[in-house]
Structure formats: structure tokens, C-alpha cells
Amino acid sequence: MPAPFSIHPTRLRSRWSPDYVLLTFLSSVISVSALLFYCHRDAILLYGDAVAHINIARRVFDSRTPGLFQLGTVWLPHLLDIPFILNNWLWRTGLGASIPSMLAYVMGTLGVYRLVRGLASRWAAWIAALIFALNPNLIYMQATAMTEALYLALFVWTVVFFSEFARLAGVHPEQARKSLRNCALTIAAAMLVRYDAWFLAAVVAIGVAFVAARRFTPPIRRGCMEFVLLVAATAGLWLAYNHAHWGNALEFASGPYSAHAIQQQTRTPTMPTYPGEDSPRTAALYFLKLTRLNLGQGFAEHLLFMMAIVALLCVVYFARRFLPWALLWTPAPFYVLCIAWGSVPIYFPDWWPYSYYNVRYGLQLLPAVAVFAALAYELVSKFAPPRMVAIAVGIVVTASYFSVWRHTPICLREAQANGSARLQFDQQLAAELKRLPPSSTLMMDCGAHSGAVQAAAIPFRRVLRESNQPYWEIALTEPGRSADYVVAIGGDVVFRAVRLFPQGLEPVATVGTPAGSQAVIYGSTRH
Image (tube, rainbow, N blue to C red; front, side):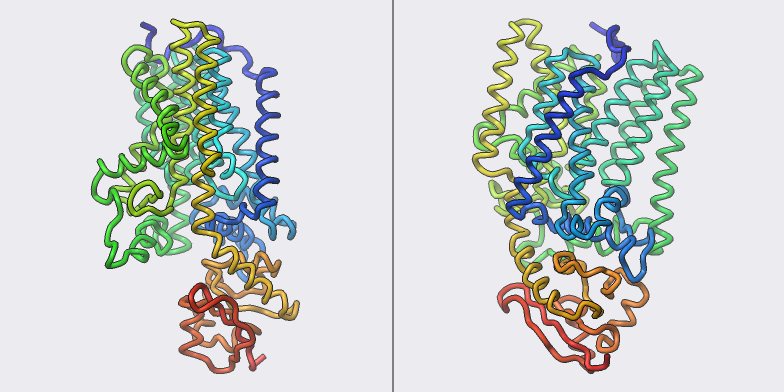
């Protein structure tokens, strides 16, 4: 039996090869084709979170109060979006903010290939990369400004560098130290993308401690210190930013935009709880079911997932040199804990409550499924003709992903179900906003409908909005004096402010219907 974390003798040479060039080309073609396809169908702005990411990035430089404190509670995606939305057309269409996600998709595909190629055959590496890159739900998500593709790329490369650190620690300590430093950098970046990475950092730290305990040479010791300092500095900087901006270092966990606060706002007397709340078992069932729905539909939903689970069991029992890859399963315990005790519900139409919410979380195990399904090929090919095994795997992948396309990717269905009405309303409101004088100022709560301002191509420096503190609070007590036009959307804070302080305001346009979202545009008589 090979020793845990043993080095493969042929993997120390340069990792770049024609395979990387071909894989980069193929994934780039898929990425660009998907962007054009979904853009033509007005689908890249269906997710409300995608619109929010775009406009949070925009307000860093285009705002009445520009600056880094406009970044919100997630930094890196917004910072990466900024160079691509400086252009008004790329901002208005949302295409600019898709570019970082598309680049991450390509890098994630290359990372999956490199991870598997480090310990397995070229065929296995290609299988893993293609299972990852061809997933219909990921193909859709990478064409949007959502953070899934970016986080998955950083997640995969974290495991790549940790796996290389574990293999090199006993034979090339200096190279192992470099790999560990790269691992820390990717974790630090991931921590600025999604909160999942904070849990990942703790799990990786345990793995680093395990490897270092067996190979505690001076280079490894220095590498461990660098790892701890870099990850801790990232966490400290993040908490300090939250405290400086909101006066609460844990604003992301307890503030008004946290998962807990959102869940409390949506809780109703008729549905006081959600599936999996305070029940790890139910949470696990829902999360694993959602993972399978991101891989296939009907009978095909089980195929790739079961292949990966069998390969994972093989690693635990007799193929332990692949143990570093087990980090790819970290999202499973994290999301089970979040669903059970973190106020993070997931809904899908197959099970109660038969709707859509957070179905994209099922993509978090895609790297694990891709890598371990390829490992299943690698292990079986030791006992059967490799070509026949590869054909069998190809049939499984084709059946799984064809079933997803046939039923429409579940992430796209979620976006359509939850975002179509909002997008239509935003476009109607944008049409009215375009009619206003070009130099006029607006007062509007952009929290839920910043897409209307975006679609109208109105610079945020002309819009007094909820992120413009402290001017916003002052304006809520005298909306008639605060802007040329006031946009009140049913139930928002501006709507309530207009009800309390209507002086100097007269309605000039109404958008929407009483049964759905409705906005009234008021003109100020005091300007």
C-alpha cells in the first residue's frame, strides 16, 4: 500500500503541456458561447445577486460617496468587476461583470486537470476536467456575475496546492513550502469571495498540521508560519473592515443582509421553519439531493454522484495517497451545518416546499464529483481495458448532462422563477427613468431594484441611495428637498418616507401593477 501523501516520481517536471493549451481553448469556447447564448436570451441578469454584485462594484467609483467602504461585505468579486464595468455599455448590459466569472471558469477547469494529473493518468485528468467544464449549471453560472465560478476556481486551486505540499513535504521541502504559500494565497482570496472559505481554511489548517507533524523540517516550519500569518491577516483585515464601516466586526453574520436576518424577514406564520432547520440529518438529505440535481435529472441524477462516492470509499480504505483530494468534500459538512443552524434554507421543486431557493449551492460539490468520478475510472482501469472504461464513463457523463439540458439546468430555472418578474419590472421602471431630464437627480432605495438605474444607464453619482451615509438618513426626513425626483417602490423605506413627509412632492409616473411590484415617481416642486 502506498504511503499517505507519497510523491509520484514523474510529476516533478514542468506541468505545462499542450493539454493545457487545448483545455484552455475548449473551455474558453464553451465560456464565450454560453455568454452569447444567455445574453441573447436576457438571462445573465436574472439573478438578483448578480445585479447587486455589478452595482456594488460600480458604486465604488460612481457614487455620491465613492470609496472602498462601498465594497459591501464581499470584496474580491467586486474588485475584479471594477475594471470591466468602467465602460457604461459593459455595465448596463452586465457583460463586463461576467468576464471575471468566465476567466475563473477556465482557471477552475485547468485546476481540476492539474490536481488529477498530479497523481493519476492523463486520461483521468481529462475526464475530471471535462466533467467539471461541461456541467450545464456551471456553464450558465459562469456567464453571470455570480460568485460560484470564482469561488470554485479558488477552491480547486487551494486543493491543488495543498495536495502538492503534502506530496513534496518529504522529498522537496523548499518546493513544498512554496506550494503551501500558494495554498495560503488562494485560501485568502477565497475568504474574500465566500464565507465557505473560512470553514475551508480551518479544515486545510488541520491537514497542514497533520503533514507538518510528520515532516517538520525548517522549510516546512517556515511555510506553516507563513500559512498561519497570511490566513490570520486576511481574517483580521476583514473583521477590521466590518468594524470600521458598520461598528460590528460580525456584520456579515448578524447584520441586516446576513442569512439569519433575511430568513427572519421571510419567515411567515404559515411556514415558520424550513426543511433541515435544527436537523442535520434532513439538512444532509436536502443538500445531497440538491447536489445530484445539479448533476442530472431523473434516474441520471445518481450516476456521477455514486461513482464519486464509491471512489471516495476506495480512497479511505486502500488508496490513501489520494487522501488530500478529500478536501474537495469540505462543502458537504459546511452546508449541512449552515442549513441546520445557520439560517440557510434550500428549496427545489422535487421536495417540499416545491420551489426554488439557493439551488446553486449544489454546485459546491461539483469539483469533488468530477475528480472522484475520474478517480473511479483510474481505479477500474487497473482491472479492465482503459478504453472500455473511458467509454463507459463517457456514456454516464453524456446521460447525466443530457438529462440536465433536457429539463433545463436547475440554476437557470431558479433564476427564471425568481428573477423574471423583477427583471421585467426593472426594465419598465428604467423606461420611465430614461424620460427624466438628463441632469436631474434621483432619490431611490436601490437595494432590490438597482437594475432599473443600471438599465437606464443613469450614473449613481446622480442617485441618492441607501449606501450614501449619512445623507440618506437625512433625506428620509425630507424627501421633497433631497432630489429632483423621488422613486418610491411599494413597501420600501422611500415609500414610507413619502407617506410620512409628502410635502413638496407630486406623482409624475407610475410603473407596475397593484398585484405585483409598483413604483411611483414623484417630482419635487421645491427644486
